[in-house]
Image (tube, rainbow, N blue to C red):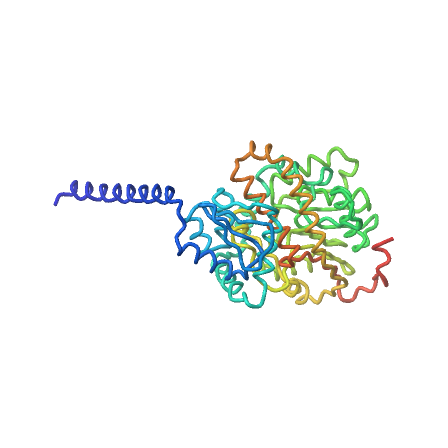
Length: 429
């Protein structure tokens, strides 16, 4: 048989397979019936996640609900293939299917997700948490310097204009706010958060501060203008550094703030204070020892520091879909894992605070503003992007309200430093 004949047969086979797939896809799309096996799968899926108080509506409008469930939230599955994908890997495929519009939610999206998270965390569903952990471990890769740059670029450099639509207007804080009063605006709560951190660090004029991961530069400007310190801030997001440098030009603190586009691993100099707000999640557990050594070499003899980070009650990895599509390389630590930064260098931990519910409230403000700007976001990107970020913000609310995620602030100093506050009165004066 000649070479031309073999090539022809190979081409024909590939074309036949493609036609077969297209016919199958059309047949599946036209098949609106629900088989007994489909119902069995749905009931098994609900049982597997602890029978949360939600209902599931299938592509033929048939509804299935766990016995005794009375919740108003409803998950809508629009085709059989979506059901199968959801069962094969719910943590990864839920996000993909929702973003594509192949599954939807009727009712309160954060409430539905929180119901599922609470049900999964029950003792009788521990096997599912174990399976999810196995899925996550297969996809985790170390955050080398080059990979860290790529990961940050994928999330933070998608456009300053996008983030300005829904973050606080003055300082663009993309981290947990602090709500001493329940009726505070987002802007007021973000300023309260920054004051809270500055008081913990007992900032005063003349001190030198190094900030690892400065976002759009708002906190560095705040520390310099409100507390009179001199700040050197590091960040590897090109777009954020450009914004920060441009913003500080219009203020009379330009000589007090320096923004450096570089990785935290390259921090140099001697400082009174080390602070990191919302960067640790991107460092990677495997790099905690190196971060500790960076802090050790840059802090002065009586230096102090604070790390503010999303965390977990137990070691684990971020949701697979968020890690793959929204926050590549992110890994929130447990409190015990955070101590691997400090204990080897014998830093003394002075204070630990968990602001979990403050982050849930922060996210509710962000989601509300995001929804109010969804038409603008849709024009910037597309419907898939709008749905993906709606799910990301809603899922984050659910993770904090259900206790899946925490928000730790850890204050520390060198072990021999005795220049310490004897009470916490300075935090609330």
